[in-house]
Image 1 (cartoon, rainbow, N blue to C red):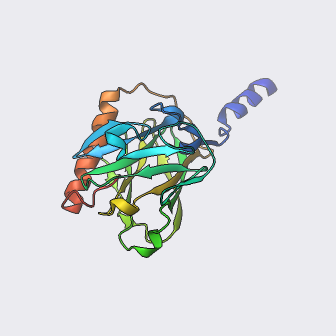
Image 2: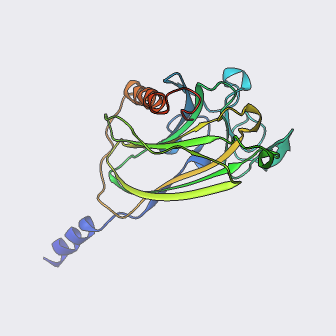
Length: 233
């Protein structure tokens, strides 16, 4: 009986916290670390993982000079500081295109979402139209819940939020240039930590459904802001 009771107690015990990190997981592979990277253009989601996409206009890379993958030391390229400890994202000049980084929950649990956004343009402090950032939550197979957009008008912003996820639920950030291609380079740290809670079993999910969900998110953002300039990514 003692052995049975101990076994039941172990099964009922909450799982240890697990942290998923968009930066350390970034290796050019979609789904690495349960993160997805790409761009939204007129509601269409395009997978990508480096600056070689769209003629080097829409970039998302780490360390080193993109499109090199992996973590490298911070360095300056022109008027841009390429960070060595966070993702580098560059939405680009087209106001209808945005960068997106999203986390998909592998198990059902409460997750703490921690984020950091930073200016990476040396002269950002001299200009008012900084990038726009929108976060969203999307339950599996459901429309996205879009949070209010904010403008990164200070050198660095951090935020933390806790919410319940089901298997396959998504939390993401969309970054737009806010009309300033010259000063839209942004650093991003994004982690999701599963808190001791009820576990779950990963369910299979098709790429078609996942990408369709990203597209619907982009379309909803366009409708919400009444135009492409302030959508997100």
